[in-house]
Length: 197
Image (cartoon, rainbow, N blue to C red; front, top):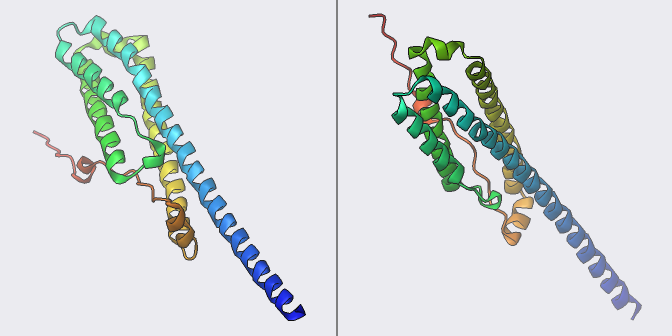
């Protein structure tokens, strides 16, 4: 009877250790996944800052560049499209991140055209409001890059932890999924054409 009781105690102790180990791995994955979600919030925050600057920039340009209506309309439409793409942080897979990046790339391209318009209008280039908005936009673009890099770092930590043995077993049992990374825009891999003619 004593031998059977000590065997039961050993089995209970082993099960308790396994449960605590599993709970520790699970909690580590949850903490890591929450870090990814929080960093995604920062990415969305800086993209929203950029979207908030655009109406003021468009209004400033509109005052000087009356016949650039198509460029201004393109910027407004691109902003609407970019802000309409909502990504669920729990589903940060390659497909949803690509949709988000494509919408943001369209806005970036439209903004590029808007900033080129200023070259045709010397008064606009000298406008204090326009210069301040342009500086804020450039600062925001830098923040976007910083936050995207931070997101990729925390996503890497999460994905690495999730794929390591034996944590991968806990991840599979509880349905944790890898998070997608931001990738460089495909156009960034092509060197710009330079002509001195």
